[in-house]
Length: 440
Ligand code: GDP
Ligand code: MN
Image 1 (cartoon, rainbow, N blue to C red):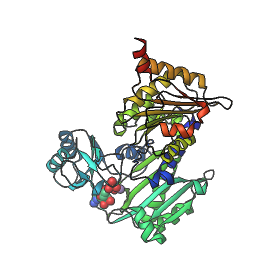
Image 2: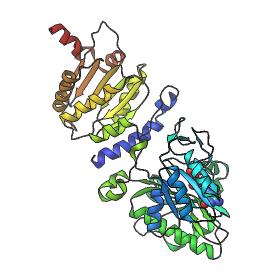
Image 3: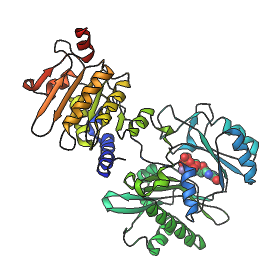
């Protein structure tokens, strides 16, 4: 498991990567693949919620259309809601690669549930929050539909500017909350919570009222809000979002949707929750990297970056951009690195066909440069690198720079090497494959 500091650095990197003006300015050329932190499916979040006294609809989960049909029959409900399970919101307005419109469907006929599920499972669902091609649906949730008389929005999140948890709510729910914040900012209400004291009754009541719950519904909503807050703390969430947090004509306050994000630093004490992680939506290469405790972010350029630390990763990307290059990816070694990880890292980097050169930029101290150097040597020997390699290892006293590409042949990383590396420190080596050719 990655050390907390490393995990934090990566969170920072992910945020920086999405916000870096330099990267944003070049968003046309660089498509960042944001790293995904633990984020559960709706059905998993709702199970946690119902186990903790939060009101959700009765539901089953299905992997096939037949199972969905059986689940619909078993629910024996007046109306059924069928919901595609992907780790992204906006499903209601999404479109499937099967042509089916809408990732959320209501019907009174269990047979229709089976027919709809057939057009969902195994197909990609594209929503405002997914990549263009969408995300493959492997499971659907079959739930008892309830009438909704009013949809509100409720979220609990860790807010840096408040140094702690904040309740955010709006009486205008069920829609994109960013749009409400832009068009009617007066309809967004916040309650800052003291994490030591916990949520006060008065805060829960005030939020319930701001959301438009009155009479007996006000107490019910406040009770749900408190339960959601207590769950948020108990499971080390960074965000619990319920949209819609709704009201039924029968006078029930119900969480119709659920999205929970978790603090990765809490993995050690939330083992059951982290075991639920569905990695099927990750890039396979991310999963492979995670096996060796490496962090990988895919980009769409042609220079692979091999770095240690979030700041250095960003700086390296910027240097590449400033010199007219484009990073193909970056792979963070983190601290406490072993030689075998370096080898695995090279295997991953070179497996990407886009990669035309590798830039290694390591700041020693956190890691031992000798370990990196040994790992690189082994990788060069055993993997028969076909692409040029520029290595910069600095440990505060020594800077070692090596470029495997002959200076006469321009390579994608040469410009970077030229600017990153003073000529006096530049050593050009023949690529390993060539060197072997020469020997034979
Ligand atoms: P999202 O589009 O991914 O956010 O998925 P939601 O779970 O929020 O569902 C989208 C919309 O479907 C909600 O805003 C509701 O309007 C509607 N919906 C979901 N569940 C039910 C239900 O049980 N009954 C009714 N009447 N509408 C529902
Ligand atoms: Mn929703």
